[in-house]
Length: 264
Image (cartoon, rainbow, N blue to C red; front, side, top):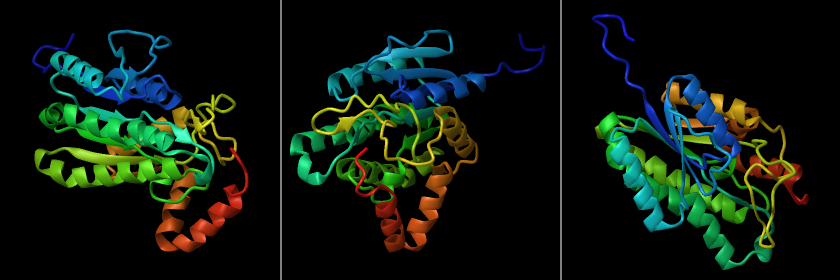
């Protein structure tokens, strides 16, 4: 109980998509440790614990009717939302000549369109809090990445949307941030890759300098605390940001030398 004369401290509320994945879980734990309440959205939440501070909700983010219904349910319970983290995503590994249009669209449905729809549903609730949107992009959101044409395109689109949304939400006191991890080891050895190359994020074997989900979550939340518009997450991401900004042709050559020719 609060001491007499002191105001009650309001528990902040965050919503995280892709909440059952490694990074989603790590973000949830880190936020709860800071005194937040966290709502986790994912297709399969059976492995998530439910408590007063962690609320798992099953949702197919690519089903527009289901997403709208779940978002309305969350907003009725928590009309003021301080933070939404758009973390759900898949990758696709393979040359462009090996993938078809349907799988390319599937990557966009999850990585881009689901996030955009979700942002629309929570726009008012975040405005009420003068809160924050964080889009979890990737180094592939601002650089090229070998054998990831669909994935890189979806992350470039995600960044373009949220960077543009930033200007529209500023008058409401809302921050829009981009977190761009490099390689986060969430599914090493468990990519469950399909015939079209679609795989679980963080599962590629051709990455480098992998981070743990817990370390990535802490960097993202430090960026949140600093209201940092672009948060390169990890040493490789920071190096990629600077090299690509100053010498994009050099970056592409280095990337091709490091990753090119090696299937993940």
